[in-house]
Amino acid sequence: MRHLAPIALLLVLGAVGYVALTGQQAKRLNNQAVRLISQGQYAEAAAVLERARAAEPKNATVLKNLGWAYDELGQMDKAAEAYQAALAVSPQLSDARMRLQEIESTTKSLGERAAQRIARMKAEGWNDDDATLDRTLKMAEVEANMSNYKQAIILFERALFKNPGDLEIEMRIEALEEKVAKGEL
Image (cartoon, rainbow, N blue to C red):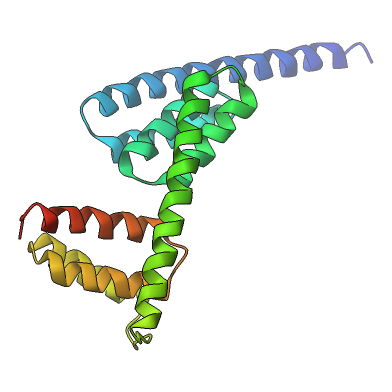
């Protein structure tokens, strides 16, 4: 039995060392991601923060910053999930709580506007076509990239008609409608 004590001690020290290393790795990755966010490289920052989260899943700062990166990317579902996870670890993060409430409010408004848009489309007699959602979204992106905003809006509306719960599509439509309203044809 005495010969097991040194092995147990080594296991405990190894575990402590592992926790310390993963904590340092998460901190280093978080700092790198904050630099990327400050440079506007949100997708890269989100990828780095996902690695930090894998290293230390209960790090509230990493989770909050992950929410920030996804927020900047317009990926509201992922942002909300990250903010919720941060608040589960550290409920006193008032900035995360405030942003989560804003996202929830925006999501509700977007959902209502998307529902109104779909109701209008149904009243106009829209039917689902044979194109896949993925193909429709790709065609819409091509049109948007070519500054054919009105055509892109129609294609994004088709995509929304196919997938009414995807509020990111509604966000894209509204952004394009704003460009059209400003005369950016």
